[in-house]
Length: 272
Ligand code: KMH
Ligand code: ZN
Image (cartoon, rainbow, N blue to C red; front, side, top):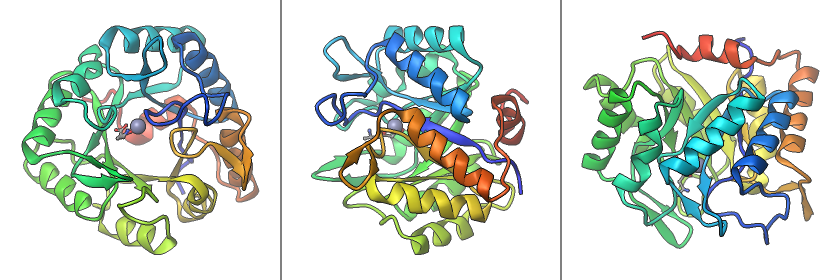
């Protein structure tokens, strides 16, 4: 098996300090938290921006500050969000990509998102894909619902995204695919053979799906964006605590952990 790539999604757009007081908000808080996660075994940091009041923002300057602070502290791969928060415009959502970070996300369809709708029309998806390619960023395909895999394969066929890409299966969002082993296996069977995959289980699905992915040869995403608990009713003390647990399970399964440079090699970052 390839080495395990651990992504930490430490911030998100929906979680608040009221939900978990350890949520990092300012660029310095975020960077310090990411550096600890890197130390614990994470090789990708999936980033969302927050404004001074703690609300989600895709402001380019905020992202620049976060990225600069992270780079001062560690060599982790920065993956900016193009999902932002529900209700943001495509122009808002794409802004951090213009900083040419190493990676960004690309959701390839629309789905229910709790009581909201996470809107990704075909023309907007193609707009994101062309900007991502223009700024030479490696996309990661975010799959919340089944059809999104097939849409991603169409984008590959049209040459709008690289043919070798990482798929992130975000499972357990209310209204979209459930966080079951069956859903994960069904999705893994559909991706092109040369592609890699990650699973991000939401809430209580995070731990079992991480464990299954480690055994299957996939990659794992954990962090407060997806899950704020360590165990039932017990808040996680930090994102790093969640990363440490994944690293420990991997070690017990004799699955080695990829450094950021090894993850760059596996994902083909910096090759074109
Ligand atoms: N906040 C969600 C509506 C991404 O980062 O690319 C979308 C999201 C996906 O978080
Ligand atoms: Zn996100």
